[in-house]
Length: 161
Length: 230
Image 1 (cartoon, chains in turn purple, brown):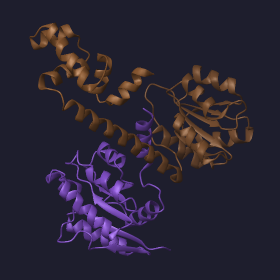
Image 2 (cartoon, chains in turn blue, cyan; image 1 turned 120 degrees about the vertical axis):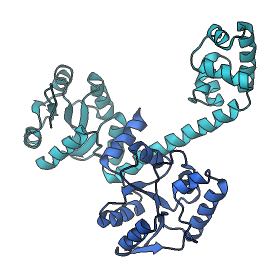
Image 3 (cartoon, helix red, strand yellow; image 1 turned 180 degrees about the vertical axis):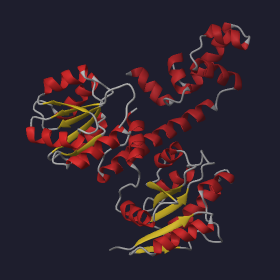
Image 4 (cartoon, one colour; image 1 turned 60 degrees about the horizontal axis):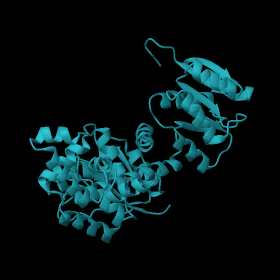
């Protein structure tokens, strides 16, 4: 089994540690902990506070370009409904890295849909069973997407109408 | 599955009695089930019975693939189509989804599994193979990129207008006539026309319909120009 490199961008240390531990239990998964240095684990929300500054996005792009994780988990904050600049930039400039969003119940489906439309390859809840995080890594690594059938229905509705 | 005040109907369509029997076993507990063994009967049932779900055999004689299915969909747009097949390529399967089909699966699917498919589709889910789902997302991403490109182009164009010109262009976008705009802004119609002439020149469009499309963010100026030539 080929090793899949994974990085996590989440400002919440508790959630981040939990996910890191979960991923380390998966065979063939290497968690890169030094991608976001100085505790500066950027999230989309953090980016919004910085007014999606070009410099901040450039910083993340530079880090991702250097470490080249195959999968990048990003915490999606519901308070940010505008900043998909980072996702778009990652898709264009780091095409070898696939973004998977970390969500919770407070995030509207439309917001997740918008993030997928801007280049994220999947999403799953922080509360999901560890089994699904490991499976999502494998599925997204293979080029497929990780989304519920309900979300796929919404995507199709948007594509067709 | 409970539908207040309405009978939930499922139409099964196949020329294979074996398939119909197996499918019926899977979904009979969900709804009233009707069966059709030929295309004419399917058409009649779609119009008359207005089923919520149609389980359609891709090999039904004279169906004519995605085009034929698109024709059936027009008979009752409310019906959700699930296509069952013995073997179809990824390309055809994707074409079926692009037509508006909500689910695809094998004709030989187990009855219990078919029941799960119908319930999922009835709840708005899409029954698509994971290996095809990337095409779906890819299409959404391309579509979004194009929208963003137009939005940016429109933003750049409109930034060239003066405040008054922008105001008038926006009102044209809302469908208002020169007279209405003049009244709203307390200026003469002649002044409105003069501003519009300048707006048309700056945006390189010939008429207010194209201007409205641009203001609404539907097309960029190039697209509007091309539309005009077509």
